[in-house]
Amino acid sequence: MVHSLRGKTIALTESRRATELAALVTKLGGVPYAAPAVREVPCVDRGPALAVLERICLGEVQAVLFLTGVGTRAFLELARETGARERLLGALAQLLVCARGPKPIAVLREAGVRIDLVPPEPTSPALLAALSAVHDLRDSVVAVQRYGEANPVLVEGLAAFGAAVLEIPLYEWAPPEDEGVLERLVRDLIAGRIDVLAFTSSPQVANVFAAAERLGLGSHLSDVLGARVAVATIGPVCETALRERGVAPHIQADKGTMGALIHAIAAHLDGEACRV
Image (cartoon, rainbow, N blue to C red; front, side, top):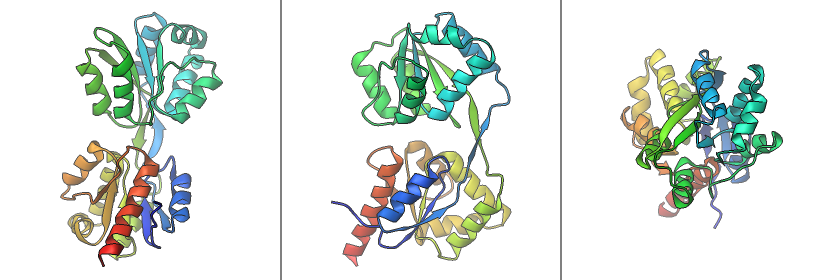
């Protein structure tokens, strides 16, 4: 059954996939409200990533997990800039290469890298499950391409399997350059112009509430999100960030994908309409 967003206004704080999410909202009969709450910026300190790159090239790593297309491309570019690209490609041919979803898969294939494992859905829990089903990671060293925030689900899961984890920090999430975007979002939420607010990461939550605090509206925003505006999230980290600010999410996707989140919002709104 395909549910409808019923003409409601859905605020999207995602930046990387903002265009396709807005298109899905429109397709399902909603009105997208774009408010990108983060932007990707390269890590200033490249030392930690270079250290992991060297260990991979030396054959000290048994598996590499690529999580995002942006991060995968940045790692290959880092190797090229430092004259280690061919060494890296040679090393990857000798170890287990995993890609979490279609974006890193495309980058790796473009570089001619063999991919050994892809989970059935592009989420960290699915990647962990797929790994544990076919590989014994005890006493192995696993490099994880880190994205803009920590990934405790994946890192702690790998550690529970007995692996030593090396994170590869390549970029981080910063507030949008135009902070007025989030201040307008806060005002529109409080004014009742938005029906659902969708978060896909904890930095988005932090940046929206930081904008509210700048306006002196932090507690007011928490009250609105707890009452008049439905809040949709992906994953436990994002949920925790909201609960720390006194907000209990109303909607969570049954899968950890952004598309699933939009469909969950539609199902929630359809359910509300049926109860009226």
